[in-house]
Amino acid sequence: MIRKDELIEKAYACGFGDIGFTTVEPFDFQKALLQERQEAYEWVSKWGLDLIAGTDPKQIFPMAKTIIVLMEIYFKEAFPQSMEKYFGRCYLDDDRMAKDRLSQRVKTFRAFLRDNGIDSKVPFNLPHRLAAARAGMGNFGKNCLFYSNKVVRQGSWVLPIAVVVDHEFSPGVPTLEMGCPDWCKNACIVTCPTGALIGPRKIDPTRCISYLTYFGNGITPVALREPMGLWVYGCDHCQNVCPRNAPWLAKELPLNLKVAGMADDFQLNKLLQMDNAYFNSRIWPHMFYMSDKDIWRWKMNVARAMGNSRDPEYIPELLAAFRSNYDERVLGMLAWAIGRIGGSKAKAILNDILPESNALVQKEIVFALDNF
Ligand code: SF4
Ligand code: SF4
Image 1 (cartoon, rainbow, N blue to C red):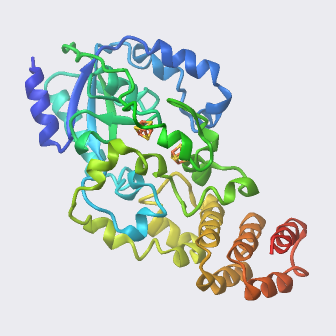
Image 2 (tube, helix red, strand yellow; image 1 turned 135 degrees about the vertical axis):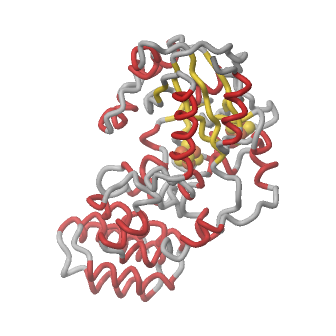
C-alpha cells in the first residue's frame, strides 16, 4: 500500500504547488446553502453540473474514502499587461482543452494512483475549494475565493482540484474560517463593480462579471455596461484589490512566454472582426466556455470594452464591425460603444446609421444620441 508521503512527493513531481487530504463526509452546510439559493445557481445545472449531488462524495463515488486535493497555481509567471486588463488570469494559461500540461498532470497523478491499486474520480461538481479548506490547505476570503496557506505568498491565485479515492489517508486539520484581516474594510465587497458580492462569502453569481461575460443572456443591460469596464472574459477585480494578494502581485515574475505568444491573437480589433475559423483555431482552445455559436457574445463584450476605453481610435473598428455584423445584440452594443466614446465624429456616425437599422438597434442608437 502506497504511503501518504509518497503521494505528496508525486504531487510535487507532477508540478502541483501543494497537496492535502480530507474525509468524504458530506458538505452539508454547502448543500443547505445551494438549496436555499437554487435560483442563483440554476445556470450551472444547465451546464449539466448537479452541485447539490456534488456535496456528497459517496453519492458520486460509493467507494470513496478520502478526498485528495491537488493545488494548481495558475499565476506562476507574469502575463502581458495587454492581456490581463481584459481577461481573468485563471483563463490565460488554461490548457484544459489542449489536453496537455494541467490535464496531463492530473492524468499522470491518477495513473500513479491506479498503478498503486487506488481507484479515483475527479468530479467537477464537488465543492473543490471547500474540500481544500477542509484539508487545511488555506482559508476563504470574503470575496468567496480560496487563499492558499502555502503557495503564491498565501494569495488566491490557485485552483484546488479534488480527487476522490477509494483508500483511507489521514485527513488534515480543517481551516474553514475566513482569513481576512480586520483592518481590511471589505475592499472586495465595497468595490465589486457590479455589486455581485452581496456580503462576506456571499456572491450573486448572475451579477458577477465573469458570469456575465461568458453566460450572460442577450444584450448586456445598460446599467451593467459601464461597471463591466474593460473585462472581456472573466474578472480579477476582487483579487487585484485584495491586500492579501499584494505580496504576490509585488513579486517580479518571469514573463509567461506561451501567453505572450498568444497576445497578438487576442487583440481587441482581431476579436471584434474574427470569423468562426479564427475563433475555433486561436481563441476557443484557450478560452472555451463559449462555443462558436456564442461568437456574438465575444464581439458584444469586445465592443463594450472598446466603448469603455473611450479611445476614439476604436471608432473606425466599431463602424467597420457595424457594417459587417448582422446580430442585433452585437449591433446594439457597437452603437452603444460608439456613443460611449463620444465626440462629434461618433455623433455623426450614429446619425448616419440610424435610418438603416432595425428597431432594437435604433433604440440603442437613440439612447446613445440622447446621452451626448
Ligand atoms: S470577479 Fe469581479 S464582478 Fe465578480 S465578484 Fe469579483 S469583482 Fe465582482
Ligand atoms: S479585499 Fe479584504 S475583505 Fe476582501 S478578501 Fe481581501 S482581505 Fe478579505
